[in-house]
Image (cartoon, rainbow, N blue to C red; front, side):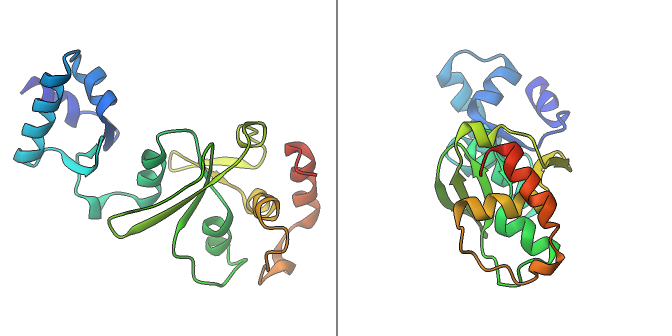
Length: 177
């Protein structure tokens, strides 16, 4: 019962296997996997995929929070996801897009994620990155700068709504130019 209480008192809802080992103070891998298996069977933990578990069912999780947990590394929401939300692009976006230290494309339940590899000198530069609901998210101008870095000929539907001076300033600060 004490492990369940520790788990459910956390602010987070997504845990990797290593997180659970630290939270519960378990060093024996067999004990850890047995405990996880039992809690999954009881419905306390929900397996998302190998090594990632949630205290809520998949359909109740925030898709962006899940996207951050999937990569298990620093990343931030950018490019098409931010620009579609801001109304800069009107094309349908089928994947949540992130900048991350490695390239990856995956689907978890109904959500598709695309991680674009960004060099560490650009990735860890916080210019134009804001925290929204606990998730690092690019501002509209940073998302434009990122998108033009990845795809210089990308068509932006509402280019008139972009502060191009700010985009240029971000590109210079980050080092894209």
